[in-house]
Image (cartoon, rainbow, N blue to C red; front, side, top):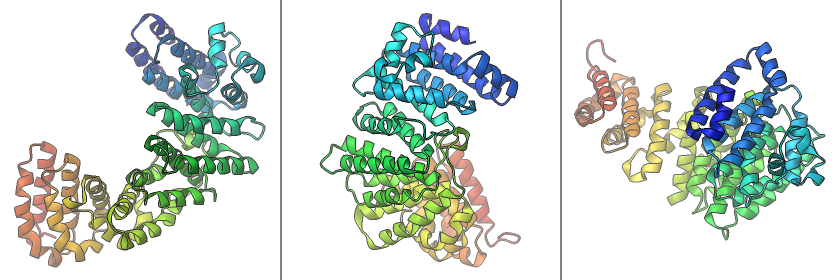
Length: 461
């Protein structure tokens, strides 16, 4: 399989090469669970060198490189590094090359990394990380995989502060969205894995200064959005490890909700902090993780968001609403339960077409989750809530229509005395959804109608 992939890289279509890599990635992931297979991949096959060599060949062969294939190779490399017991040497070599670049300054790290490398491969390995150089830029995929997969960044690892500075400049300057995300994930992984000492404090202080400069309103919007991405992921890296340094970054996100240009994007970024990523900052990649970090983050922001929502108007009110609704779908119900009474009024005010599509889509998903677990607090809001939900069952995206029907279904579990005055209006309002052009919506509408027909009926709710 690997030989076929090597042949396809030079003689076949890259789409087929990517398909083979996808299969190899699945095989490697499965094999790493077995000790004997893991030993073969890491020692006899020399997996990390094989994959790193393939990444370099791909960058040399295609211009621009095939991004899905690069991402797939990075996934394999990340898995292999995560299984290595002592990957520090490889991490040190790649970081040194990314910072210094030239053979003289890197101390021969390229030869230590790939002893059998060709002159062309050495030239690529010794190209420093620079957004103006496509070859050096694409080595970022390998660098992110190695740092993300490493068990830790030891105190002996030099150049890491220089690397973080380069990565921030790269993320703020590159026009490639895919590379910018890779750079930000690399930055977050390094911040998360640094030792709890002066090195972490210095890295965090330098990141603060760079982010403050890039978020200045005088900067272009693209650069400010890149700085927001760094802010979000640095906050997540510190939240996940349970560091008190996250307080500045959390406060920065809360303050950016007032920004007329970045407000909505910032509101959406709260979801990133609590949402699980397929691999970034995950236990499988040896991220420093503290228990209940999501709960602590939510507890720290829920009151400021609710208070700001209550006292503000216009776009800031909308941003607070979106931020809250972005957080809640990713939190366990035991965390949300103590706050339902104060967050429900915020959510309910978004259940109307007049609030705009961004708010409605966030709110209706959150409301469905809340009502399915705690419908009782909604009893006093039925006169407003039921007509608003019925209006969302038509002329909305399919996800909104189905979630609105789920909300109506959950509300039908309330006591009959509360629901009976609204029963006929709900049944009448569901007729349009029963004739929806999407089968899944018609099915959900039929189920909801059946539940509401039983309200007040013998044997019903």
